[in-house]
Length: 118
Image (cartoon, rainbow, N blue to C red; front, side, top):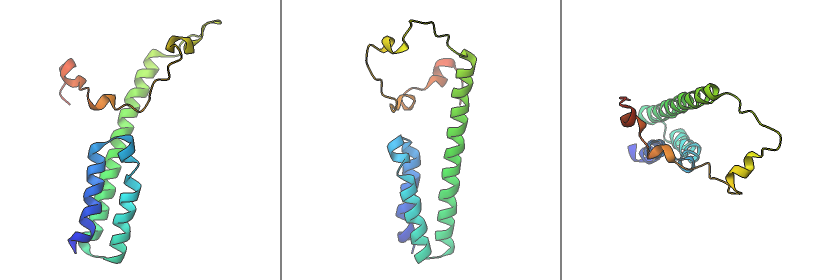
């Protein structure tokens, strides 16, 4: 019966490993499929697959929370930017709307740059 739940379980693992916004958005569907299969083919192993997938998602969520906390801390260090009348921050972009969903961090490893082991 392992073949029934192994594919959705492995899908959750792969989606977490890829870690892009589009892939992370697919996790609820993969988890729901795994849960539905476990409801139909209930066994100790299928229940364990659901629990393990749940723990993996929780771990990924905690990691993202720590990453967000680091970003928030960086913004707090900078503080508020003083806006002078007549200054328009949108003019700095020259009308360009920069994408916010670039996976920039996926390709940049600053730990080697700073000599820090992660």
